[in-house]
Length: 125
Picture (cartoon, rainbow, N blue to C red):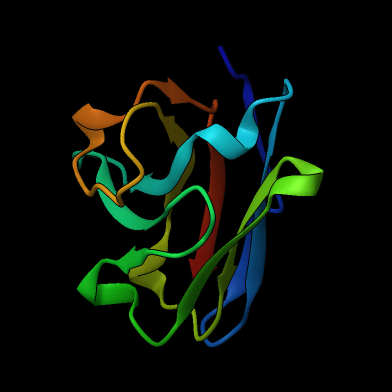
């Protein structure tokens, strides 16, 4: 089992940047494929980005391509989401998630086994 804790959220103006971190407990972080999701008020939780265990495979939602970058540091049990050129429509609660099983990137939230509590990102216009 792994516990996840997001940090780095907050309020930023449109065009600004934030870097989210997801710290994982335990010694088996490198055995999980990871992902970032977000949920805006009144909307379903949606896929943002995913990364395989060794960072060999990465996937992004179309609406963040070229703006967001996912990465991980297995030695530090941490995953990151660098968010640049933020837009008001990026406002949401952002969640990190861990997935057991085969080492592929998966976009479906139903494939993830563990979730962080979420962190608010607010982009003002």
